[in-house]
Length: 424
Image (cartoon, rainbow, N blue to C red):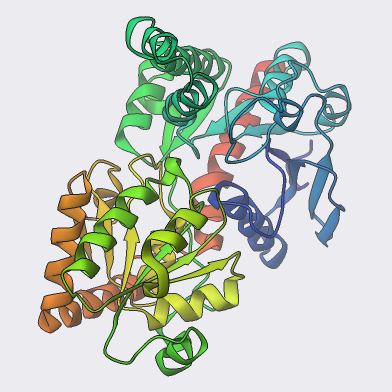
């Protein structure tokens, strides 16, 4: 690579790219579009695991799809997986392509893309960087327990032995933590959003090799200018006297949606004027429909345009998930002037500077019912939180171009320059 040439970077996302993909995939889609629309000296290919059609976004930016070698979709016995990934230890097609890059950037430390990248980096001397996007060890604990409970439902003694005595979910979670630590050791740099991830990476690489990574927001798409409350109420048959709460994301146990459903049930039973809109797909959607009836609107997948309209038009976003590394949903809501109730355990509120637009809520349906009840009862609180959200969105949220140019590109350049100097 000559210094006058764009830096060639491969970013690896070992997840399928679909319209209803979560924040991990959406983050890198938006970073790729930011690269295509900017003039930074970068040639970026973002790889996804799946059979989608490749896209060329510009002369130096593309989205590439490689089918998995052994995808989790093959494991039919699993009760439910929030997304599919590749469990193979080596992806030959990816390995052949990675040889052309100056830097390889992984977005997990566990699956086929990351394992292949580490081997290619070691064998060919291509520097490796990584960033934290999904708390895979925590999700492993949650879904391992759920799978055991489903498979052993008729054998409660076996279930107790696997979960309580042998502690299988916790053991699986710790195994993923060890895999992540091994992968980080293979990297020159890591980028982190949460303090706990930063601490993990610094303990392995040293403080100088761990850099901050912000979450971007497309402010042209997400903003208060998208407000259309009358239209949202009309389209979903919601009365004008209702306080409308919004849930966005996978409708499953991993996002802690049952806590929200139970909290809403408690409030509705007491006569609270609450209506819940759920935007997302997942196995808990039917339970929400059955338990909340006409007090809930189940929308399934919602595109970005409609999601922006919802954020800007509802009264509050509810982020009940207790396992988050960052929150694209939270940032988009604030950009639209939408107040947010967020799980205290998730640690999301501090990532947004504990803005008064965000209220942290302790675990449990009773605490969520109390927080929602207070929000419903106080028009002043709703107004103050909305004003705070608008202010935060205008002054403190980064664009995706900012994240690319200020957070990521300098780290990739450092990794490439170090490698070039060592080879000289």
